[in-house]
Image (cartoon, rainbow, N blue to C red; front, top):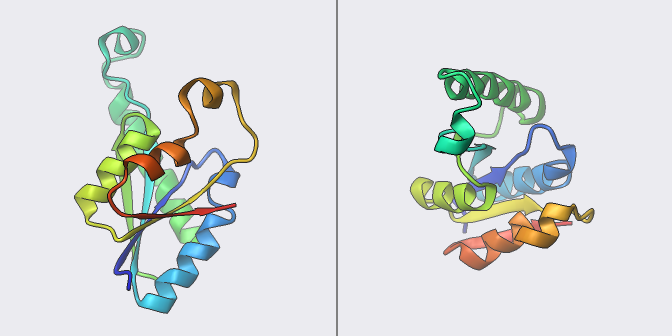
Length: 142
């Protein structure tokens, strides 16, 4: 039923993967699907934002994030799962939807945070946006 499963992960927020990862792994094993671990790097290229950072900041941040994500996969994804590391730039929900489309995934498995932060009230939770804007199935794990 599923061939490619996307799992968005915020490496600084364990709640973004603690419950969703086991679910995604079970689905991968059940259907023989591959797992695509996606981490979003905020977009530092905007002129207003970018002017406050050194010119090579985005490149160094991408390298550091790539190393951290590979460590995460090594520590948390068993060897029997075919896994791909993916880093995308932009706003979280837009980058997740765009990555899912580009990778041709069948399912997005993601956590829903119960704790709402101020930004969630202003912008809406990322999971809600992904559900509304994604063309493929989305499983929200609570």
